[in-house]
Length: 222
Image (tube, rainbow, N blue to C red):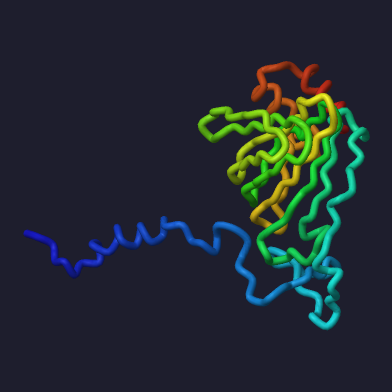
């Protein structure tokens, strides 16, 4: 006996498809409901972003930010420096779903393997020879050495790095589709967290002994 076409069971596949379809409002930062929302960084209540300062207190200078200054790169053995223009340093981008970084590299400078959990990244090489690489969730590694005028894109959440392989300095400007893309740096996350990640987890994951893990942790203050 055939089931009636009016049975609710016939609606289940359609409902499942609707649930699995991408929801645009969840694919990036929420859409703004006003022209601008310059962030009140001193607010005590945060709801997936910052509340706005009153429009009467907004000035023209709030909408401009200087990324022309060279960052100091020799403060660590990584020999690079990031100057961010995200909501914390440039409050005008609050709720706009966009931010930028200026990244300066000394010779051999490395922006170590990391990921951005809330944004896709696009970068423009302005100076130097920059090796850009990332690894997919299928563990496939893609890379290329870029020079002035070339751009790259890193899909959201994938582990990636940039390294200056030229003889001189390097400069890269990057942009993100989030006002606060976040950064998970693998080395400091695994070996410099507070409280420290248990040695038994790291020794088993990396198939090394305690001495190796403790040695690496000592370099990251954990």
